[in-house]
Image (cartoon, rainbow, N blue to C red; front, side, top):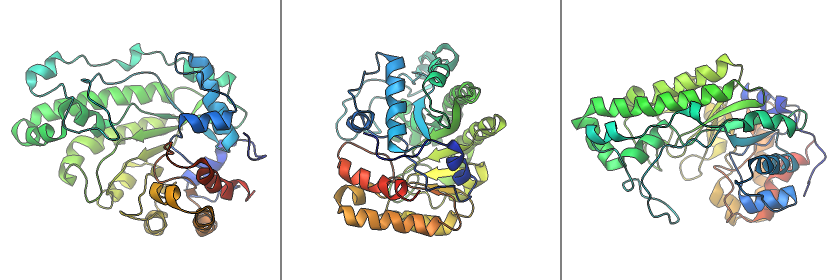
Amino acid sequence: MKIHNRTPNIENLYSVLRREVPARPTLFELFLNEPLYESLAGRKSPGNHNEKEHLKFLIDAFTAAGYDYTTVYASSMTFPSADQERKDTISLNKGFLITDEATFIEYKWPDPGHFDCSRLEIADDYLPDGMKLMVMGPGGVLENTIMLTGYENLCYMLYEEPQLVKAIFDNVGERLLKYYTIASQHDSVGIIAANDDWGFKTQTFFSIQDMEKYVFPWHKKIVDIAHSHGKPAIIHTCGYMNDVMDHIIEIGFDGKHSFEDNIMPVETAYDKWGGSIAILGGIDIDFITRSSIESIVTRCRSMLEKSAKTGGYALGTGNSVPEYIPQDNYLAMIQTALTRL
């Protein structure tokens, strides 16, 4: 289902990330969903068991939708965790493996260098001219640490065993840095995306002081390694970010993704920070799910017009495109950019 006549050109997104006005309205999304990928690609998903075909499937879907990049993982690396029941949400206090020094020593830490990253080379055979890959991580520094320890346990450990907390963060951070270092070396990779949720509706999970001690330094290293290879770096993080946006900018991220109307509408975020960092997406998930086509088009057009003179904005949802968003609503959103050629 190709819905436009444009060809990919990563330079448009690079312009956005330099806070410039791109040659044409530009789209950004962290990821979509399998049924939508199938509609866009015009065929059933081959599944992850056929890596080459699935990679081509994703590239065809992103191309058909009008994106200038395709989101992928560099490899299948994850941080092993205990199984937990998965419903609509998951608990931050179940399924943890590290509770003390003994379990920390026993934990089997993954080595990013032992995972197959050949998909980043194979992609050269499938990427259309002008398109690059955006590599996201297997979770982030804070996310993975919480997954390994449990949120409540981690909060206790911050006061009772700060040296152990630092050791856990450092082990997670070192592996994510190596993961992104490997990815940054590939010509097919155009953008590095650090995906690490830091908070919820009213505040961050950690105090700013603890974020500065344990989380921010590793993100600074990730940004620096991306920039050293000539790749821009974006941060996807959910929740209340008002108190840490200055830190995100200081770390050196080129773009910020994930916005929510009941925290701060993207229009307000753009007015407040758009001169210092690119603002990506932001059309609220609840809004795009429940609103009429006309309302969606009006809001998206207004956001594109707001950024048309000063730049630094790419259109997309506030987070990602889950299956419960009606496809017609999603298409209405992206069409406002695709029809303004």
